[in-house]
Length: 259
Image 1 (cartoon, rainbow, N blue to C red):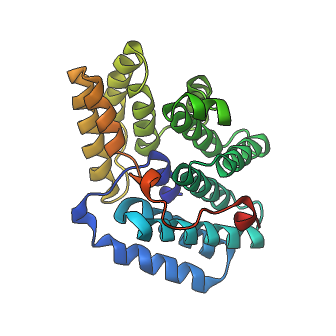
Image 2: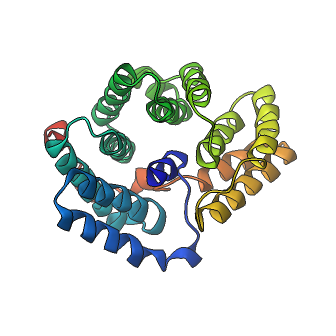
C-alpha cells in the first residue's frame, strides 16, 4: 500500500538513494517467486518504484514494462486485487505518457472509475483518479480534449479521497503539486496546504525525508511567485521524469497489456 501511495505522488529519489535499487530488485525477485497475486503485486510495485525513481532511459522503460506484466500476472490470479489494479493503471498511464498515445491512458481512467463504482468508500481509487486528472490537465489542451481530464474533476476526486480517510503525506504533496500549477488563488492555497502537510505524521523510513525535501523545495518556489520556478519544481518531483523522450523501445498496445 505504501508503494502505491509513493507512486501516486510521483517523486524522484535523489542519487544518494541509489543503493536502494538492490532492495527493490530483491523485492521483484521474491514477489515473482511467490507466484501469488500478492507476490506479483509486490513485484509490480517494486518495479514501478525502481524504474520511476532510480533509473532513466531504456532501463526505466524496461522496468515499467515488466512491472505492467507483473500486475497482469496478479490480476490473472485475482482480478479484483485492489493494489494490483491501481498499480496496473498507474503503469498504463506512464506508458501512455511515454508513447504520446491515448489508448492506455483511457484504459487506466476506465479502470479507476470502475474501482470507484465498486469501492465508493475507499479513498485510494479516488486518489488515483484525482492524480490521473491532474496529470492530464497539466499535459495541455490536446490531452484534455483527447482524454477528458480536467482540473475540476481532479479537485473533486482529491476532496473525495480526503473525506474518506485522513490524508497522508504522499497524497497531500500530490495535492500541493496540483494546486501549484493552478490560479493565483490555487497557489496561495498550496502554501496553506503545505502548512497542513507539516503537521501530518511522518511517512515510513527514508520516504519521509524524501517527501519533506520535495515539499520544502516546492514551497520555496511558491513563495517566490515565479511561475517558471514553480513549474520546474513540480517537474523535478515527477517519477519517470523525461519519459516523453524515452521512445526507443516499442510502444505497448492494448492487446499487449490485456489479461
